[in-house]
Image (cartoon, rainbow, N blue to C red; front, side, top):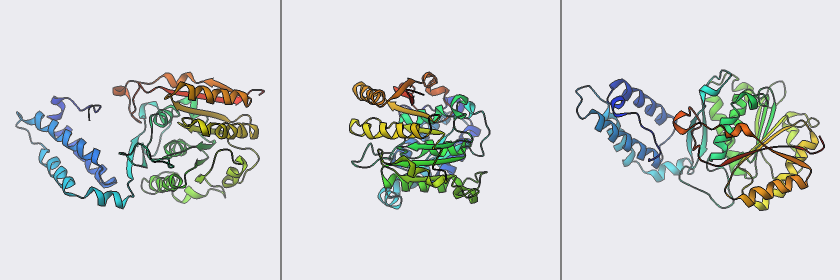
Length: 337
């Protein structure tokens, strides 16, 4: 809880502010069952409000928070986890002040395992810093032009948040891919939830098909495989994709050769494809190997300066993430193009 920024004591003493927070908590409760970290948040919030109102004669909602916290403590967290196979719906807010277009809704729900760092042989448990930074970045006009009205592919989609956001930002077609079938299944569930429960203006009826073409889909795909099989959902195996995104995908050295091959194959299919890759700088040698492999494969690797403009945490309005995380962005292109 040490990284949370609560309203000031003066604000929390206001009944109107408390009621607004309570309304939000009630909405979140209806959205999904609480995980352990939610209980910790509620307890911290309850204590903050109790401290703020101890000398106040105004009405307050402390009892409501206390009753909710008590009911959550009494519930079996094991039964909650079993119901969702250990995954919870996590809701992210889009950075509203950075959007240049109107959206039918400003939140995105994805399935995550908040308390799990990693499981061997499986991806897509969490939305990591590089993906959150990526999602924040593509709302900027300089990137949005490569999304709105474009065919977008995401490699190593994980929770699918970048693909979902691309769809909401007006991509004509979006295909999320991951090498783990479980991750792809969860992405499908996230698609259905975000479209069917939020009244998206593009409509559930248009989710699967529009004029014979799939708008939003997901597929298991292993890097190094034939990339042309991924065009099948769009019935267009000749022009490739307009945009290829890949967030936090180069942390394993052993998988980099296949990843680089796949990225080059997309550019060979369509040299004008906008390819953008992000990576958290965990190990400089790993990043250097990726760039060396790209250069050896005939690809140009360019840094993306726009990605360095990260607002401080308190100034962020959505996809909240640490501005201190060292996330690198690389744009790729064919060397002879």
